[in-house]
Length: 162
Image (cartoon, rainbow, N blue to C red):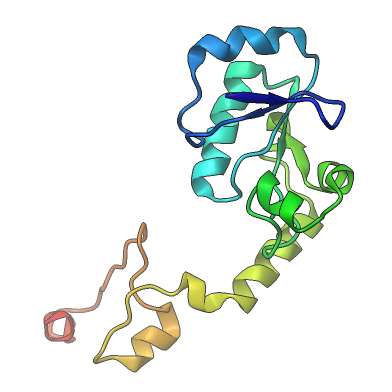
């Protein structure tokens, strides 16, 4: 773990990734009233941010998600630094407290829906080589989803699945 004070604020770097936070460093954070967590903007980073926020105190911890408003935003603080981005602006526009997790605004939904529409290929699953109508309708079999094929007796379910 490294501590940087070049910005006027201490910063802690996790050299071994989001899932490797040494517990012996938790007391170090007791002296801070506000803690900003900025981990990778992927599912692993977001999940780890929420776990860290709960351990550090959800009322004093703010999570930075640099891709909250822009899917093409930096994946982490290092990426933002290399792009020459304004950290103050990122902190003001891409921060949320853990208490805000279940609160969505219209603009949050609008951005997410637009991202799904524009990036539908990323959300596509395993494509059927035989049934193009299935690919067009359901975008294939997607991980984490359950597809049910139902119908009356003799309607061709088994034939379809075979």
